[in-house]
Length: 482
Image 1 (cartoon, helix red, strand yellow):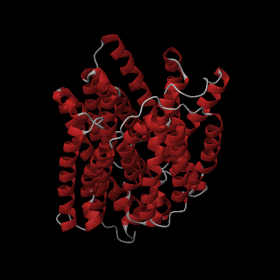
Image 2 (cartoon, one colour; image 1 turned 60 degrees about the vertical axis):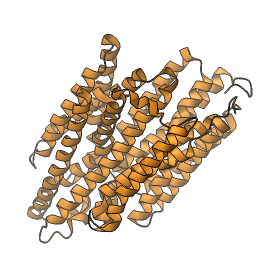
Image 3 (spheres, helix red, strand yellow; image 1 turned 90 degrees about the vertical axis):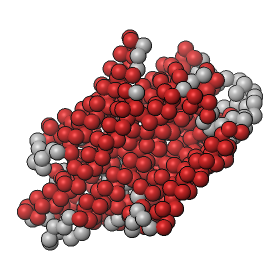
């Protein structure tokens, strides 16, 4: 991006950066704020078997669109792409707030994710236009603070708002923020005309998205089609396989492929994608289920459950900062990825066998331990992919690892949801009604013996969810060791 108006003044650049961070906070907060509100949403709409899709649809849409946004920014200019993404996200938030059923909410979340993916990609590209490399590093550090802030306040804010203002407020609050950010960026952000015209690999992005979506949908076939062996369920893996074959053919011929196939010549790259997918599944994929676990097994309100996520965020910060310093000192990333996944297996297994009336400090300690584990392994796959890739493919390799994290999270959310739904359907508590329609408010209103029985049923169901997460972490651990 070299053609266009003169560079804005330093003061104007700081104002632009502030509104970019506001947009980032809005997009990242949304993925966190919904976690503690989901039990209430599920109680209103029912369909606990689709509980995970509220998060999975957002992540899947975000993952599918991110590679395209990067190319579009180079093609038409980052200003217009950023404005479009913020507008799309804001409109999606309005539709989420007006949702009339679980299916409509899931569709709206996917629409919202198309905007959220563009916001995240565009911000880092715009920073490269606004700031020189030496100055850029300082401003990029503020981005990390915004991410940590949204992770810290999101669950607590979501729990409080859903409890006192209703769950729709967690989406509708984005409207004034989105309009403010949209107006400011339209007026202040300079438009740099592209000095080159890259080719956007639309067919590659589409076929890869279909391949991933088919697998994610198949994992949830029992709730969608009633059985894993129903003909629509059996058709999904076939569709995914066909889309994957088409994607491979497209990527071999594309001038600027989404994922250059030459990257797979290094075996480490494929292993790092497995590690990235496993990390996404136990990190991003677990957030919503931690919230439901806390509310339905401890009787905590949505607001109180949200406070426990401060432990996760604190652990994440400790692990991430520790890994960053160790990698800088030793020049090695692999030991910390292996250690992180090993620690994650221990924490998740402990959560799977945690007794019903375990003290809150023990629950908080395990959640913090998982946060440390995630932080230790978070940077390794990206750094490893960048090291293994040729210089010209560093951007594509980084994007591929990010995509693997998002895809792994989406798949894990569907698997966790299917397991939870299956276990709850097998369990009945006389006098409590359908467990799939239970909310924290209804649980609190039950007589103590009945409340104890319902919490025990959820405790049993979540034990299997956490054990499946242990298996996912183990797969990542093996790939990291290899």
